[in-house]
Each structure stands twice: as structure tokens, then as C-alpha cells.
Image (cartoon, rainbow, N blue to C red; front, side, top):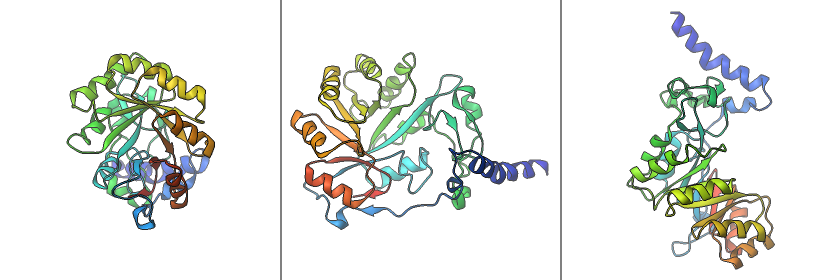
Length: 282
């Protein structure tokens, strides 16, 4: 009987506590609801001959909890070009898929990833408002579980490394290699040294350099690492001049995060074909 009561307290009162009493966990997180996807093709943006290539930001989290296996499965089912995830390291050195270094109000439990083992994290459940029960059996994925979603699909796994670490980079590369995803996977980070280290481990894996503004210096840094290095740049921080510069320099790039048809159309007309989004679809 006490077990049932404890579970009720965990599922209801704990998320409310962290939502209300922490400024980083607004109460709206507790009432997170599925969002309506907005079709670009229905609004005349892109075509079959010249499409917009969409990355699902933290998975298709308009329809399922962010960075959860269901959110990545939804991205595959909806035909996204790629599905971005974030990874952190557990206490026992396992890469897990979660954005923040701490488990926050998006979950029914709380703690620092680096202080928890994988076994402990696997007891944590998603807090997704009225749809909490739909995902009650979903758990924080390991990197390997995330990659398994993309085997045999056309959607690219896109892995953002959330911490500065070099000892465990080989585990990421090996997990990609073991699943035959070398020519499909993308690894991205703000850290050029990490990108260079991964390039040394396997030069065939596509790398994206996360940046704010696209400048001549940034473009040169990316090109110095290798031919298959893209830029993943902030939509808010880049002007038309920056975008024209990247295009003229011949470097591939994607912009994040673009969530309106109007923004997507302006970018498309400027020549941008790769964007990261929370709610847009083709």
C-alpha cells in the first residue's frame, strides 16, 4: 500500500515541487502537451525537387517527450532528415540521451547525471503532463538504444556531445561503427578539439561544428578539421550577410531553431536548405 502511495507522490507532488520552486523548471513543463505539426509543403515552402531538410530538435518532441525513444521513432516515422539528441555521461561512464547535466522538471525524479549510475537513471520516468501515463514505461535512453532506432532507416542520428570529455569519445565512435551507421551518423559539439579527436578516430563520420555566428574565422576553423565538417549555427545570431558568406565559402550549414513558416520561407528564398526545428514538418 505504501509503495502505491509513494509512487503517487513521486509522479504528482515531486514534479510540482520542482516546477514551482525552481526558476529553471517552470510549471508549464508539468502540463506539456502534444503540439500541432506545421507542414512547410502545405505553405509552399520547398518542393520534391528542391526540399527543405529538417532536423527534429531533441527528437520530434512536439509529439513525445524530448530526447526519448518515442520522440526519435516519431521523427523516423515522419520522414525527418535527421533527429538530434544530446548526450551526457553517467557516474559509471555510460553515455545517456538527455540535454541537461541534471535531471529536471521534465522527469518525475531529480538528480545530477554524473552522480547517478545507469541503473539508477533507468528508474526515472518522464513527466509529460496529461500524457504522463502514455510514456510511463519510457526511460532515459542509452546512446546505443538511441542509435538502434536509426538502423535500416533513412533518418540520420545526430549526436550532440553535452560535456567536455575525450576519454569516452571512442565509445561514441565504436557504437556508431558497430551498427553500420558511419555514413549516416552526425556528431556535433561546440568544441573543435573534440571534433578533431573524433575525426582522428574515424574520418568518415560527418561532423557539425556548433556555433553562434558564422564568421570567416569560424568557417576557417571548421574547414581546418576536415572536408566533412558542417556548421550548425544559431538562427537568431546570423544575418543575411552571414548566411551569404557561408554559401559563398561553400561550407555546408544548418540553422537552429526555426519554428515558423515565415522564418523558413525567408531562409529558403536565401538559399538555406537545412534547418533544425521543434514543430515544422515537410
